[in-house]
Length: 118
Length: 111
Image 1 (cartoon, chains in turn cyan, brown):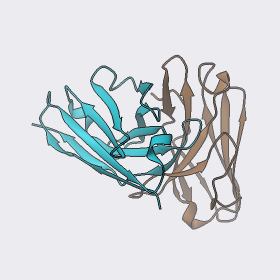
Image 2: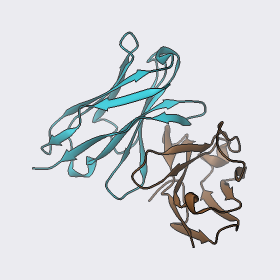
Image 3: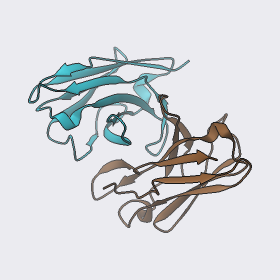
């Protein structure tokens, strides 16, 4: 069965950086695009970033563009999100998700909580 | 302010039919990009409910249906059940942002 397991969350000071990881199993990772989506406490879903299966194209939401980099290692079935210049408003649960078709996410990880606070 | 606009809340009695709208613009839904819908029960990971405007993934009851017209899309739920109480989100792609976007979400209350 498909499993996505995020790690790397925690408490970070404003201005700091963080790298989230998502280890995938149960499907052919190298043939699927992957997403990051976040959800601030008590708020709605916010799409963060997407990377194509071969890493050739990357897309970012406005709120993280220029401060974040999505990447992947298909040999390790792992997706990454590196975030810089973190702000309190980046505090959220970050989910990785498997792309199905037309930007639809059919499997989600359990999420990693990132708290940006001094 | 979300690029895709949803009503903050809707409600209905068990057995009734409710619809949730998702209003976009000429750079997303109106540009013929597909709309996807998700259900999120509080404290649980989101679940894909409808993709490509009107297709249900395996296991999703046929009480859920999606449609799209012009710059808007809708999710309809018939035969409302208590377990349908959740937050619902629409999603599409926006070519002016070169990014995917979610609606702000709609809280469905089953009375």
